[in-house]
Length: 326
Ligand SMILES: NC(=O)c1ccc[n+]([C@@H]2O[C@H](COP(=O)([O-])OP(=O)(O)OC[C@H]3O[C@@H](n4cnc5c(N)ncnc54)[C@H](OP(=O)(O)O)[C@@H]3O)[C@@H](O)[C@H]2O)c1
Image 1 (cartoon, rainbow, N blue to C red):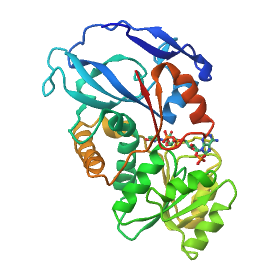
Image 2 (cartoon, rainbow, N blue to C red):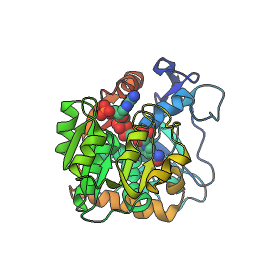
Image 3 (cartoon, rainbow, N blue to C red):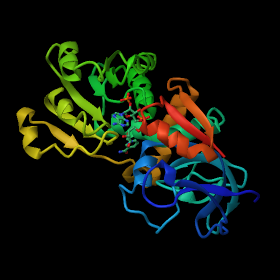
Image 4 (cartoon, rainbow, N blue to C red):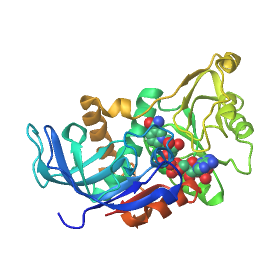
């Protein structure tokens, strides 16, 4: 291995904590694989982890990054079903902002010919999230009308296309006219600019007062109470992120107004089940290879520019997926 390096956060904090560190990897252990990354996905989760929203497993120099694709370089004892040279992808909470990594073989899936490394790196975490949101959190039916916040973001653009392919009428929200236009081009039937419009009033207008059976809300603090008001009676709030801050104003008593339900799911409870990971990845790769879900990589940057990329993501300046190239 030559010039192996990683981008690590020195301590929990802002994007300026991200810095380059040299990388020396051990040989892969039992059930592990060493990968050379070819493309690395950037996610809002990486920002939360960098900030220390979730406790760190190390004292300092945490290598952030939760999604990647690459080539198998070495196999540890006991690994079956993979060979040196295989193209693979994964989502694991940390460790992806690196030229190389050690990964458990159980978290890797082989890439089919119809899916490029950049597509896989842009879609493993975001696309598998879209998968469980629309098949498990609330299994949508053709003809449903649903609401998705941050529709022009990484998860949002995949959701719009996947929902459209299933015959669902998706209403999206996005910040500003450019993002609204992009969301409309990616499957959404209606898009509300929630910076300039009252999204609750608009959803009630679009649904003729009926509301929606499900709101997929990853924005959190700024939208959560309005999201409830968009729900039909017995509707479900899927609170799956907090880009604007924790949605801590929500109290159980608020649900009584519409006999509403709320769930707060996380992808990592799904991907650690090998049968789910294989089946959901196969579905996702079919959607990509068939062109039903087209990945919009809004920005591709060298791995060494990860701090700038984080500033753009936090500053609401990105659209679609962002990929780092080692
Ligand atoms: N629970 C899970 O399993 C899971 C898995 C994957 C992702 N997620 C969550 O899903 C969300 C989307 O992830 P992503 O990586 O695809 O990010 P993203 O949607 O590309 O970026 C976040 C977007 O949130 C919107 N936003 C609203 N208020 C914001 C604020 N105060 N600061 C920053 N952004 C704000 C912005 O879009 P506008 O400018 O259009 O408002 C921004 O572009 C994140 O909250 C992430 O944590 C959860």
